[in-house]
Length: 117
Image 1: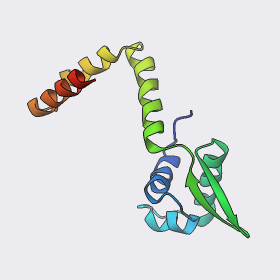
Image 2 (image 1 turned 180 degrees about the vertical axis):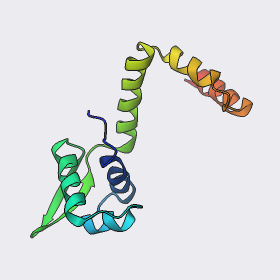
Image 3 (image 1 turned 60 degrees about the horizontal axis):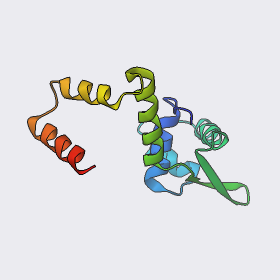
């Protein structure tokens, strides 16, 4: 699965959030407004990548996600672990725990999650 580009990501997030959208719906939700043709082109690229599909209503298409947000997230995390932590989940967790922004409460929650799994 390919990583979403900076242009694709906000559009895909809207598609995941709304589940079924027309291009005009995406444009309404975007923080930075983009021309119809630009958004439509990006959605077609997402479709060619297998991220979304569509239902046709004449010349108008309604798009929906084929890949869930969780499936995408899981795949991207796995890629990060392989690329940056030599495939080691321990290495990833060590990096997270070394981060000064992680609260003691979050560390305890992580311990509980590890014990449960």
